[in-house]
Amino acid sequence: MDDTTLPLHLSHVQKSSSIINRAHTLLHSTALIALIYYRIASFFQTAKTRDLPTSISCFLIFTGELILSFIWFLGQAYRFRPVTRTVFPERLPENAKLPAVDVFICTADPSKEPTLELHVYLSDDGGCSVTLEALKEAWRFAMGYWVPYCRAYGIKTRCPEAYFLGEEGNTESCSGSEFMADREKVKEKYENFKSRVTRIRQNSIIIVNRDHAVVVEVGFLYLSVVEDYFTSLVNMHCKIWKSVYCDPARPAFLGAGTTNLNDVLIQSTRWSSGLVEVALSRFCPLIYGPKKMSALQTMCYGELAFFPFYFLPLWCFATIPQLCLLNGIAIYPEASNWFFIVFSFVFLSSLSKHIQEVLSTGGSMRSWINEQRMWMIKSVTSYLYGSLDAIMKRLGMKEASFMTTNKVIDVEQTRLYQTGKIDFQTSIMLLAPLVILTIINIVSFVGGVTRAMVTAKFSDMFIQVFLSLFIVMMGYPVIEGMILRKDKGRIPPSVTILSVLISTIFLSLGSLVLSVFLK
Image 1: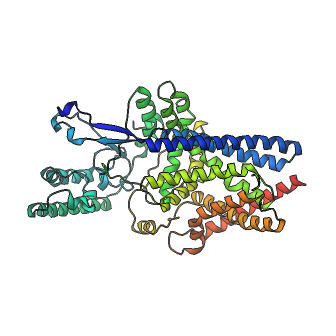
Image 2: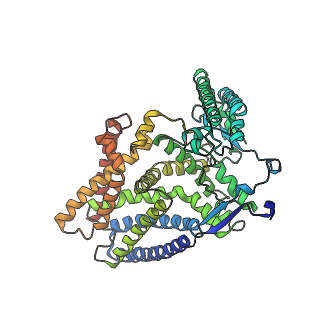
Image 3: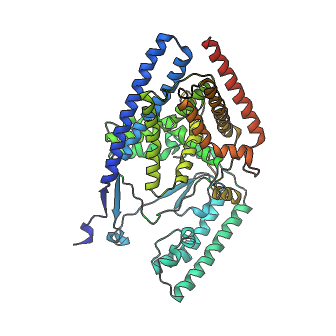
């Protein structure tokens, strides 16, 4: 059969994963319905007793639970029909018959977005001479040495950095003397190329034209800092374009990512702002998408658009139960209550499903813990600030802006990362919420356990005690950064002192208000 009539890829539904995911969705949804029933019934009960502190606390927690459940429900669309895809690159026609495709990467600041790792066409919105000179060097190396070498020996890993650092550099081609000699020659030329680019960066004065970047058609045509999300939603999938997800065993590209907590949170803040902007606009996926996309695809886009609103439930769960715990107010069912099983199931169901997904995709328990920690860290910082930024822009109180994040590898930061430690060199605005919430939960856990033992009401407060303990465990890197670490990436003592002061004020004022109502 002619290769041109054969498919280039085949899709296979993962039946076992599909069954597991749908069963989990059904069970978890049933538990959430029971949880909602318990909360509504509790409101009527507290209304009769006129227990105002409990009513307000439960209402805030219930609001957080509803938001959490809503975003979780939208995310189930990703899991409804998982597929794998088999590709057949050998069936591709000759190069001359392939359609021409241009791939562009937009960059504004070569000091933060290293030119060495850019391997396709570049749209330099910053208008930097550094990027121009570096690309000239890249073109000379590629055309003079790298491309001929790849063609001569059938090299499939086309990124030189990935090729020379990975195992493919030794195994994917023949090992003859001529090949080894050419390989050493090309590697030497590549090292020389990197050195020249480094000198260009060091010897140049970088002037970035930010005004030009604001009006370029960096995505800003739509006044959105998530141009990829907006473009795929409005100009592609809502216009009947189709796309597939392909994750080949051999990476197709080597990308550059943020390398420290500061840039991760700044980048996440920018993304959150853009996503919330879309969610609050006429292009909200849940309104704009249903007539143009499938229900599942609409839910997928909706989950992303509303993802930053995780900050609301996370802030509720990290402060209100803890304050109530210190003041002896139970806002969850006691251990002997049947609904205690419902709340426990919802919590364990969420964690166990996440663990299963991490492990099934090649991760480890350490990966799962790190993902949980980063989700909590982002929720109480960048998701909060990004959402507020979008709302302010929506109200005309702030103009759209774009700040590039640093992707240059730092030796000290890399060392901390490899040892599993977080580099806490970031602004007080991003760092203080983490420290404040950790301190609040430490105090509430110790005080709550002590109070529960003295009053013999541990059963009533079990969930609140456990919740504080869980947050403290997830926040261990913060505790380590405050107390144990002495390196440059530790949490500055000034931030710790400020956070202790704010935590004390919050717990004192909160307890005072509750005590007034309790009387």
